[in-house]
Image (cartoon, rainbow, N blue to C red):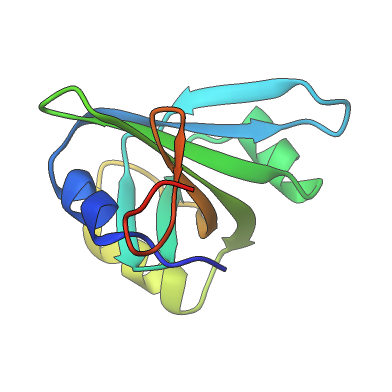
Length: 131
């Protein structure tokens, strides 16, 4: 697991619009969705509420890794890649229930464990330097 660079934590706080959450089928077919209900849990983890997952849930169930792409108000883009786990109870699920709008079902929560972070095409290390 990797730690998010401070630059990316600050960028997340300034992100604009819904991030894009990408998973992949076993045959390599990507699936991208606008994920309107996403939160940074800590310096290593993002949570995505499962309000209406279908293909995304199939991909997660088959062991897909995931990617979260977001843009800041200034137009800077960031991508977080990592392992995806899924929970329907426990601490991550309970946390999601505190910020997921009541109008959405919140069936479960996809947990993205950060492994790689990019600013545009440049891979970032935890100390904000380009690798």
